[in-house]
Image (cartoon, rainbow, N blue to C red):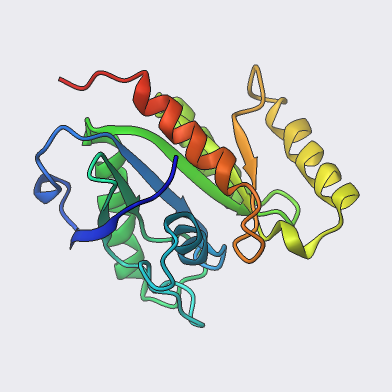
Length: 201
């Protein structure tokens, strides 16, 4: 897939106010310092489509971007470590939960994790929650340029070993680097293939 157009559509904190059209959506979510905005900008060939910040937790709303006029990229607030109040975090959690449970146009979530670190409980718990709620998802390992190939393989295998303790198989995953554009073609091809096999009424 080639990204020819990527346009911001809307931001809100109420899933009932999300776009009404029956266009497939792919939601990107992860801890607030995982490099989500950089990944989105890399995928869409835009330097500042998603706002990047030196302060984690910048994304605080459900953000819809229309890609190639055919599918939505949804940028969701990060979880954990964001420098916001406890009440704000509860608000984020509420509308994130409602988005995943109520958004019929959602085709798949992409859970971003920093490949440099060992599996974090907050990431694993979120994946389990998605599984328990029958929400399809893939893992996107970010910042692969920070590790050597052997280390990348070892870290992915560590995740696989832990996940296979409770999952029948390893979830679909991608290894990416925003600075090197690693994994870009594979991820966009996956979305393209999925869209081609879809029928949204």
